[in-house]
Image (cartoon, rainbow, N blue to C red; front, side):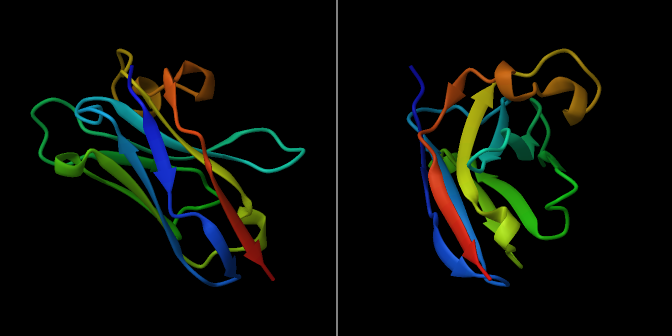
Length: 134
């Protein structure tokens, strides 16, 4: 059973930065879709960023929600079984519980078609809270 553990959440002022980490209990990230989601109170879960490295590829592909493009960066360190979400220029509307999730890819031609939506992810972390004050 794969376990994912998020860390790095906290409280910052608008314009600040945080880096979230998602560490897996075993080698999970190679050739799997890894995604960050967030959910604010009273709102639906939102996909934030996805990273996927296909077999034989030297670099991963990434995808971002429009709301975080240019501000957030997802990356991974396979040697550490860790995926990161660097969040810059944070806004109060980024306040939410952030979760990472992992799933095998589906047949497809790019990250958007190969990586599932939220309910398609098999493994989830417990979440880490991010609070951005104005």
